[in-house]
Amino acid sequence: MKKIKVLGTGCPKCIQTTQVITDAVNQSGVEASIEKVEDIMEIMKYNVMSTPAVVINDEIVIKGRVPSVKEVVELLN
Amino acid sequence: MFDWVQHMADWIVYDLIQLDPQAHLANALNFFIYDSVKILLLLVIVIFFMGIVNSYFPIDRVKNYLSRNKLYGLEYLMASLFGVVTPFCSCSSVPLFIGFVRGGIPLGVTFSFLITSPLVNEVAIGLFVGLFGLKTTVIYVVSGVLLGTISGIILSRLRLERYLSPWVLEVLANAQRDQDLFQQEKQSLAQRLPVIWSEVLEILKGVVPYVIVGIAIGGLMHGYIPNGFFEQYMSKDNLLAVPIAALMAVPMYSNASGVLPIVQVLVAKGIPLGTAIAFMMGVVGLSLPEAMLLKKVMTIKLIGIFFGIVTLCIIISGYLFNIIL
Image (cartoon, rainbow over all chains, first blue to last red; front, side):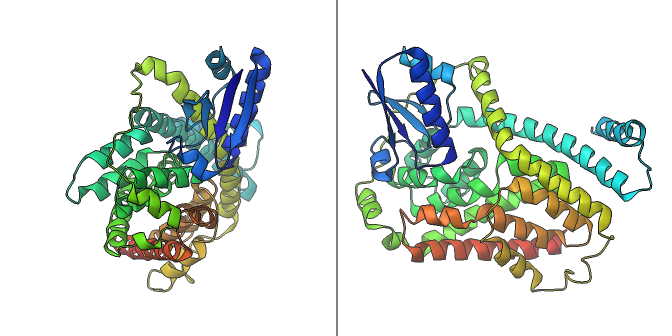
């Protein structure tokens, strides 16, 4: 079970990223939980300066851009 | 360089649709087609080029650089220059601000970056080249960078740290010139290009509708407003015009993409360029939504001082433009 977090303060790009992640999880069939982190203090704990950022199992894999579904599927596997 | 675009526009309007070259509608349509194609091409080129630069100087690297090096006053200029190559999204301004504070970067330097980043960005540059030509673009970029630098220096002199939100002060107290380990991506340019290109498309998707609508409105105004129409109201001698333009612009929220094509027509019809640029800088550089976001990290008083100083600098550069150009 993978823990995925999307870090972002609620901008359109962050919402888009969450959608991409959801699609990727469904496509890959990997078991994962998706959490959206909007609280700025919480976000800063991960030390990212550009949102949206994607964290899988506490490791930052993407920051500052919206990933593609394909990319996320590869990251999940 | 863009002659062929003009030929194409002529061909579509006069041969394909067979409009009368004397008619207002024909002129407006011709202008619209020519401007849209030219500007979209320029946007692709500039955004792509900036994407490459940014890929090698990501924000973490910028922060580490500013945090590590003692630059004896040059750090304001450096922060401002980094602001140019970093694409700005107002939603990133808060995490970015905290990241800088935590890295022990002085508040004024952080402000320099925050001011220039939205003011001089890839989309604005592409539009500027297409609408006003290279020379005006260079003047705009240089003055944007100087504006960020000078405002940052003024803000640092005011010792504004005490007006930060309490939790940010705590971050500030624990600030260290640390070097967050950042995985330097050792990728070749060929490996980077697909990511850069998809970013280009992403940015274009966001701005194209505004650009097209802006150019369409501009095209209509171009055909119907008589030349020199505004000169009687807003001449260079009218000293109030610049401050009014800047103050009007601050609460407006739009990206450069929608405003610039319209500003270009206003200039063509007689509004002095400096006045128009002051307006534009106000619209692009300062916005209420950004102020709302910044409320999370600073007091309203600090936001007020920040916006006030920048507005003042915008007004001064508006006057300077009107004198120089």
